Amino acid sequence: MTPWRETGDGVELTVRLTPRGGRSAIDGVGEAGGRAVLRVRVAAPPVDGAANEALIRTLADALDLPRSAIRIVAGTRGRIKTLHLEGDDLPARLAALTG
Image (cartoon, rainbow, N blue to C red):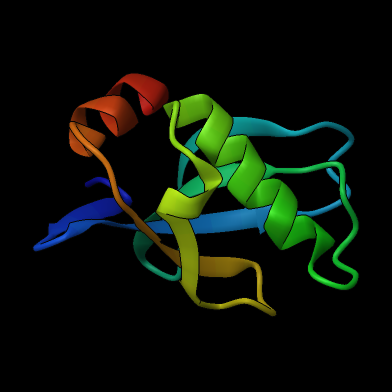
């Protein structure tokens, strides 16, 4: 089970975000609510969208994507978020990242 699924115009990715995690890092695949999630932690606090911005920056750097190619489509105020990613070879990039 993977935390992403391909859509017609990119990939939908489910993330479990841990703000104030000490440092920004991708901690692999886990489970939340019976579904697979990509576990990501960021140093930023969950104040004024800082953690969400840090999440986008962390994923963009890890996947070699521009930040504009990643947007949060659900869960902006919760720990479980759904993101939409646009780019080439995203399933392969995600598989290598979670490897």
